[in-house]
Length: 351
Image (cartoon, rainbow, N blue to C red; front, top):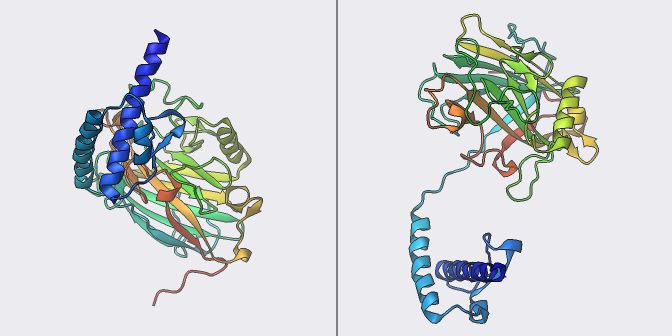
């Protein structure tokens, strides 16, 4: 029986290979080598190899061609989702206080970021600024990169709602690799310091590329109920988890998150030390003395309200808006926007 099962599986794989090869010929008009993702070990076939595949009759090839034609037409009809890739400049500025308070003039020497209705939605679209909106700033000094965000949010999870849990993970609030650091009202920063990537890879979880979370109602340093930094993705990597935790505990990244007094939003201020968190080359960390440098950046704003508000979305999330990228691929490094570090140049004066 095991032999017959394996034989049947082989025939199925060969049929799939035939269909993929047919699609290749229809779309390009020439014989091309096509990677068949459904076949183990990434076996490669082309139309010339089909004649060498036993048990595949001429009639099956014709059926495969007809099927491939239909699939090709179907694929052609699908709309192409554009990848949003904005750019923001970080100017050399004064060192801010990371206390969750936007003091007058504290961020006037920084570049401004606004959103989020025109950002990329991962879940339900934001249709009103009173529901979810953001005003942000970015700048740097000799040793640190700084962000600040003023978020408008009409419902604050765990403050104006119960601290409910998603059916997908009853351990969502555990401060462990099993928890969901981003479950709640939160922001995420993703940085690709080298600004290089291979294919559709996500961040590696070290100084060259990382993804960290600042949650309004939980943190590594303050526990449940106290906003601040949490270890981000990839949580499946113990090395990444340990790097992130060390950065938090040793102060290489610091953040403050505070709800507004009217409970209609919150403030986040975030500091990131160039060494060890912005490693532009192996063992080389950014400094303004290096000069102007482009790094990859993405920013996420997560909005969790009530289970009813997020019905149909993963974890019943209401909104998750991304500064750069396309839906479902926004964490790939090739989806990031650009943060241009302007060395020791201050922000130009406004005419």
